[in-house]
Image (tube, rainbow, N blue to C red; front, side, top):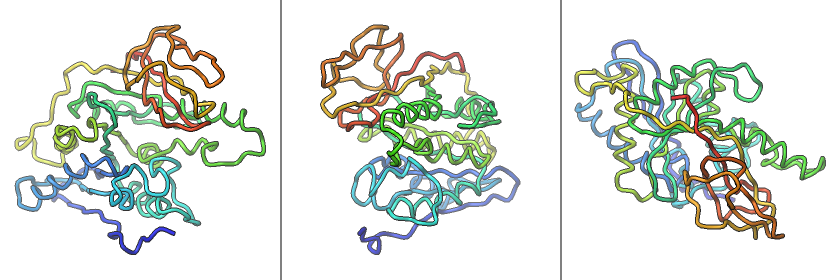
Length: 325
């Protein structure tokens, strides 16, 4: 049983401007070892409180720490990954279920979400963006142009889409392999739903900004600039104090199109892959425990390679160039 009594209560801080405007929520430490967002949010809070930054219109809600248990432990998760299967539940069993029951209504009360994260290996910041407008069943959406405009203002040069569709296809293969009697969370397509996917399901816009490596001293600055740029872009702050960026620099666009699971814990990569490493069609990516070669089906790049994945867990993703931006 989690000793939740020693944890701080769930906390969000809201600022309302005098003028009209959208409702923006900015979140940090959805994963407890990803603290760049927490540091950036606390820096902004101090500046708002001392009058350096003025919220002129709309409403800004800041959540420095979403997952208090994981944050206290300095780990990615407390009892489970908060950024999977995110939804309110009438029967909370794990600490993250209680977080979801608080966080999901908070997200739904806003128009825009900026969720701040970091990653394990060295690399440049990138943003995860939602789908193109569609009326499908997995992630219907009608605000792609507005999300794309927000992407262009963040100050990063790489954008990735295709997450939930690809994850759902992976679940279908996983279910087929597991058989009809299997009923675990990783076999539910909703397991791919995190903060941004939930926000879009409630009619809002949402971006996940991966600000850099966990320990990169520049990652909090990337997060801070993105928040300030977003505030200016949405008109929550006076543009004369922090001009909204024009967003004219080119952005590399990538679309996730495949997820490969481990079949056995002893499946091994051919080398120490990192996210955005390029692969050519037919290149050896890894070898299964039974000796079967895993080859790249086409030119593209690897995303989120996980050497620690267990059987039936996501081993790596594949992405290819897109003309979206």
